[in-house]
Length: 336
Picture 1 (cartoon, one colour):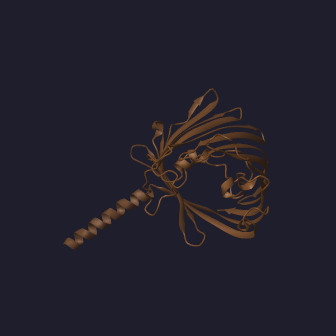
Picture 2: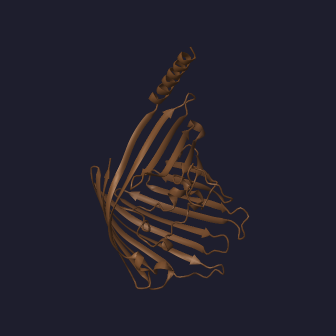
Picture 3: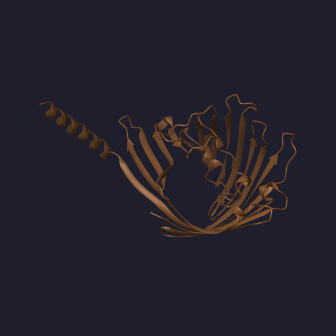
């Protein structure tokens, strides 16, 4: 009798689970990219930063969404890097609360502050993304929300032809890298950020953010980052400018970054040109040499396939006057 009861309860639980699963929508997508890169640099830069290479990158995204009994919606996204061993690259759980806003829990990436580090228009990638030395990366805003974070986003507000979006993010493991196995990062360092973005029907978009990294009483105080941007789209043409400033902690150098770009889209063809500069300032306030990045890019889409290319160059690479670093990339990407 006990065995019969156990079987009956198991069947009932299974049917409830199946009912719940049937109320959820699932989707799977991904991309595969074949990319060729060529690097060249002046004599003062390490030889490991030069040469040519061909690589393949693949990602797989699993998504699920459903509605709760109270009308709230819930969504889940899991992104896997399928190169070699299958590994988690990012994940998010989102709860839509209607007029109360949206709550999103992020692992590694997905926080709103991390998404406005560089919003300049580009046909391929940001000027610095994979096309500059790591030390020349001007994209420091958003580091407070780079690991496990919680986003709260207010409902979009419409006012005089403008759409206003705002968010608050808290990260209990700021600036320490992504969460370890189990999805939890423990540290005395924490971070928080607020963002505000306004998009007008005229094509003008402005926004910005402020973030703080609390070093848990570490000597040197907290780190503060600020960024502001403006973009204007008129038909196929988009131009943008952005500035960011970093007040470093622990006696480090302060950083200043400037971005500008212009992009033009004609049907399936996009071209862009962008520049960014990174300037370090010592504690005494004196500016060091500017690291100047520039990139010209193009992309052409044919259905699920996109062919892209970029030619990028860094002046005063590595913070040394006269040093140069160049990188050219061509890629063929397939979305499915």
